[in-house]
Image (tube, rainbow over all chains, first blue to last red; front, side, top):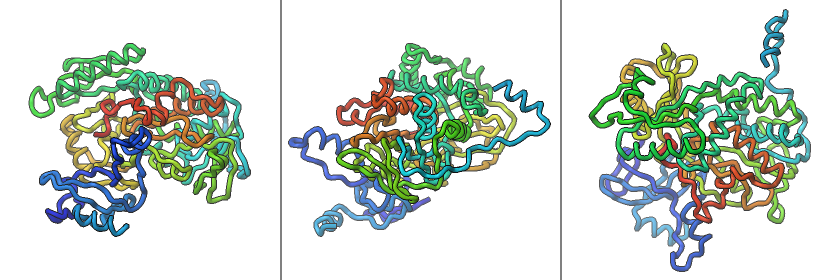
Length: 92
Length: 413
């Protein structure tokens, strides 16, 4: 079984997690036009390479971000939301 | 074909028929360049040549033809979907498959064995009833059947009346069947090449040339090729190619795993599947059991397999046929699939003029091969998308006119 390091629970079997896809910024629902909104709803970069993704450890309902390579399936790092916001601020 | 076969049988010598003519020289320009030499790309080339007389066509395949998902699927052919749009389209594919061996002069070993989907709860029975009524209305052979009828069709099936997965009803689809998937690709390739289509293997597209919003050619590892029209048919990698043309798709790539057992005595005539158990089983003409199931739980561009998924596949298959516990596995593999939000394909125009899409084939591409080939060819030749393909346009994600087939694809979710 592949292990994923949860920032809260440490390394756990990957079957305990669900992936919610690549992090994408939600446009403001009040001002977004149909094109921007359907883009956000349905379209995807579907990157073959390193991506930041939403993951949830379901037994504890703990949400975090994983940096994963979508070809090799290597998980480079996992981040708590605070850590992720910090690296985002630094412009990564 | 029967006469040809008889003549061949009565000959003194039996010369082998080459699968494909020797590879021609790459021209600097083609009327149509098809990216992807799987069943779909080759079928488009074949129908362009046969029905529209367009033979200045190149099919570019980065590896070998039929080596992607065409050779990795579980060869199921059926049309028991839930929306009228899908039923109409897949029914056209089933009808083309019936005559395809004759048409391509290749024995595809097409066998109309019927497909049986099992219901283990009331919600499934309700959705089966809907699918049966839609299918009947559109002229496919499909009906809801009860446990005694299921037992008569598949005497070897374990039929618990209680427990976690009781078998309450079945969706019996007589039009369901199987065919040899690699033969489909090679048959289309051979007959397209005979009509003048150029097929290039080991030829990888590295870029799409777009000039003022129009596709004018492709860049490859063998140089640039100018094109009147470009078609992409690269299941699993659709997003990457679309990115080269400059747009995104509503597609996410997931692996789909399958496996096959050692051959055993024939005991299973229909194809049996269960959506709740995420498993479907069929027995090949050689006696092997082909077993498929749900997609991987997260996105990945890799054909690796996992023990987790194989274990769950085996566990669920044993719910249906417990006596298979001692049968050994021969092979297991995976393919990478384009999953769309509504579990329906994307066919037709793209945001780039002269650039055609045949994508989003998820876990249901093989069964559609001749129909997508024929109608995509018609769209390209006439520059007008035929009505049967219109519901599957990329635009449906902008106008929110989705074609929801999530419940009728036995493989995922």
